[in-house]
Image (cartoon, rainbow, N blue to C red):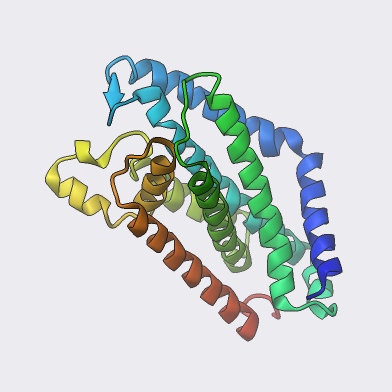
Length: 253
């Protein structure tokens, strides 16, 4: 494995983050803090506890997951789309670097940035609500797995997109609504039976549920099912990336 090439791609992408620190880190943290203020005050005053946890603390895992998903997709999609837009992707493809080393560099940087943001939001949340993390190893494991999976998904979107507007199409119209409807701000046990059944077709439910379990030891879905669904989505993304590089889809034309 060409570690020098991976380090070069990874370092370039991370440097871009620090050059746009206000947009990459500060803005998402402020937006998430507003969720704590608005939802914690407006809804928290009417819902004392959910599953034995104060409402303000209950929504923390969901808010972190919301930021993690959107930022992983955004970072990875823009990271690979911009070289396509400028034409420098052909220099990368012609270099003595394997496809998987390119993926590791871009996806690794995107996942690192989203994980950093998730940890910053976690630290920020502790200023607003009392938090406890009953399973810190599982929490970090879900953080890494989710960031890597959705960074791969964002990488696929960046290759698929043929315009800047398409970079935001999937996150805004699909991922964000699924996250809001995936139990980020409520327990799915609070829903009527029909809607609760339909919710189980939402893949984000399993991510949020597993991540919340690592905090409070309770979840809407079993931890084994949450982990299995995340791994299945990761496998699908890996298969799609392999197909893209094997066929050269929107890379060689």
